[in-house]
Length: 156
Image 1 (cartoon, rainbow, N blue to C red):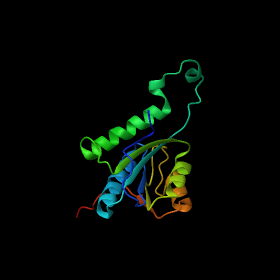
Image 2: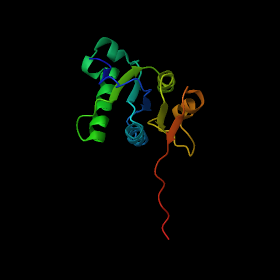
Image 3: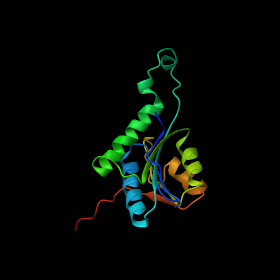
Image 4: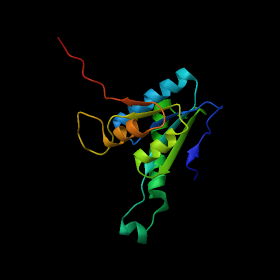
């Protein structure tokens, strides 16, 4: 299986969005879609994956459960949910090996903007940025939009 679907259109630099399956990354993807539509530029949704370190996987590999296949499948589900089915041809999905921050910073080299959620699946609760979003904000080669969660509206 290829690690990409739907090549980007035109010569415009794409918006790149980091997705890890968390609610905040889904919100970031939604915002990236809105921006790409408004600016009429391609969108690349990127999910990083890392190789398994399990001895079980070394002796009993299951190709359909490889980290790459799982990551790409999750990314496809998120895109289908966002677009209520098939996503448009201006959206590219990528599952790339490596640490999420490093993968996204590398993708930012050719991007118009990088969009990430403020926190992901790490489970570390913080009122500030997560490690990947902080790394991207300080290391990316393009502007970075960090999408924060909705704040509950105060009731009077």
